[in-house]
Every structure is written in C-alpha cells, then in structure tokens.
Image 1 (cartoon, helix red, strand yellow):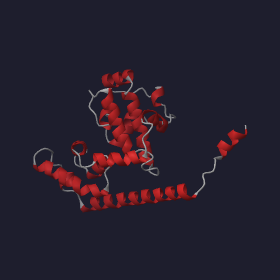
Image 2 (cartoon, helix red, strand yellow):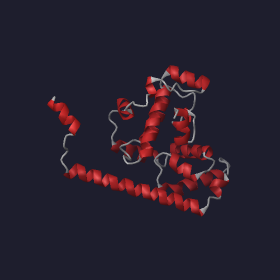
Image 3 (cartoon, helix red, strand yellow):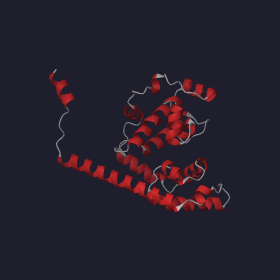
Image 4 (tube, helix red, strand yellow):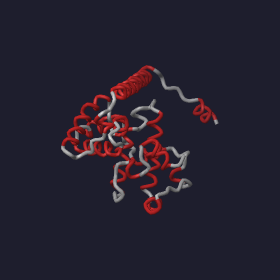
Length: 226
C-alpha cells in the first residue's frame, strides 16, 4: 500500500502535513517537532502490544522522511505524489532505529512526562478543535486522533467542543450533537478493553524485568561461537 493511502487509512487524511499536525509552509524545525509530538503517542514503548500503534509509528517515520528531504518535499508539494521507490521510505527500514537517531535519549518516562505537559493546554485544545472539524464531529475518530486521549478525557473533550460550538467557533455537526447511545457504549467498551490489556502487559513486563534473568538469544549465542 502506498504511503498516501496508508495515511488515509490510519490517520483519516492523505495530507502528509496534516498527519503530523503542521501546515504546508512549516519550517524544518516545525516539521521535526510535529513528527516528534505525534510519534510519542504511538511509540512502541508506550503500548508494545498495540499492533496498529506500531503501524502508525512506522507510517509517521515515512511521512517525516519525505517532508524532511528537500527534494522529496518539493515533489510532494508540486505534484502531490510520493516517490515510493525512494530508499528513505524503504519498507524494510528499521523505523525504531531511525527514530532513535533523532531522539536518542527519549524514554518511556519522557513519553509520560510529555502527556502531562500536553494535556489541559491551549495546544491540546487547538488540536482537539482541528480534529473535530476534520472528522466532522465523529467522536470515535476524535478519541483515536487527539494526542494522549483516554476514556477519562471524553467528558472534558465534549465540554470543550460544546462550548466552542455554542460560541460559534465550530460547526454543530449532527454526528457530535446527536450521537447515539449505542455508539457511545461501544466506544467506551472498546477503550476499556484496550486499557485493561495494556495494563496487563505492562505488569507482566515489569515482573519479568524484576524476577527473570535475561538469557541470550539463540542467534546471539551462535554468533559468539563463530
């Protein structure tokens, strides 16, 4: 699948700039920050069992690889296409390693700290409004797209968005103002299941780190004998 189609499927937009939350005239530094901010929320360290998060993380790496390359960015800006044969977006590239070359000291704690510094800020509010308009008030897409969003944030998000609608700042989409109870319950159940699975996997990982000795992999042992 091409990068643009993949972005449409994963992020509900094929616009590479929108994927990382910047404008077309964004500077290199702004593109880098946008990539950093979005990638933190789907980094494998944050939710190692979430396969879709891993796919999103890899796609974000490709988006940044395109927009950080002057020639590729120029082609995309002028023609709206991406050179899928480029080495920079090679399907077999190690995107975790690529990310580490730019942000080598980032840890899980840094990611958690980022969440704390981002929530309840004007930046979060602006991102929320942008996603609301892009998704035409679809709360499922809003909860999937806003950075660091959890089930506990939904009520707060609704209050912010309703206030903006009442103030004439946002369009009153029917999908938001008249969302069915069934859809709300389905979303809540799904996010609760995801949260429980994440908590369980982190618990197991912590227990393994604490009580299990780390044994060398078979492949590593073979290399050592050669």
